[in-house]
Amino acid sequence: MTSRWVTAARCGFVTAVLLTAACSRGPSPEEQAQVAALGAQVAALEQRKSLLEDTNAVERLQHAYGYYVDKGLWDEVANLFADDGTLEIGLDGVYVGKARVREYLYALGGGRQGLAEGELNEHLQVMPVISVAADGLTAKARWRAIVMTGELGGDAFWGEGPYENEYVKDGGVWKIKTLHWYPALLVPYAGGWQTNPDPTGGKYVSTLSPDRPPTVEYKTWPNTYLPPFSFPNPVAKYVASE
Image (cartoon, rainbow, N blue to C red):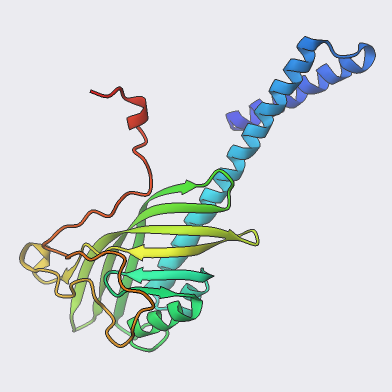
């Protein structure tokens, strides 16, 4: 049993004892203060429990995104988005709404659902830092994608880059509100990044027009760009300024 559940159990036991005593002779001011303090502690534990559950739900949502993208299951990917959700991959611009997200994904996948035999499209979702709002209705998260794509006997690429995403709880269900991937590089496997610049320049679909232009213009490898962090330094507030 974890410490927070032990604490909650103790709170419940002590509260019951105090209330029993109060019923026989009426609560003293000190007992009333104790009960109020215990009630506040239980409420804080419930809040923490809810935030942990929400964090786990957001993590599960993003992991599902990665697994579906791996196999080119574009309908499943689109269904992870809120109705007014947005998708922005590299410098391809912003696609608004579930229908437009699906249209872009199909264009990214060559107009078909799923992968061909011998085709690889791995997008590992790693390094999550998830921040759930205090009201439990929205969240932000930074992730990193490790990418391996290509075809047997053909070209192969690997790449990486961070996401800065936003999520919304809609009818009790967490959905993607804004997904923005900032590719740092996508280079040929042969020779790697030590000899190859990024030939894509962060642009992958030329057959569609986005609903909005890219939110930021930048250059990919060998140039570098650092997207702003959605979370504060978790240690800085505990360290005295020098």
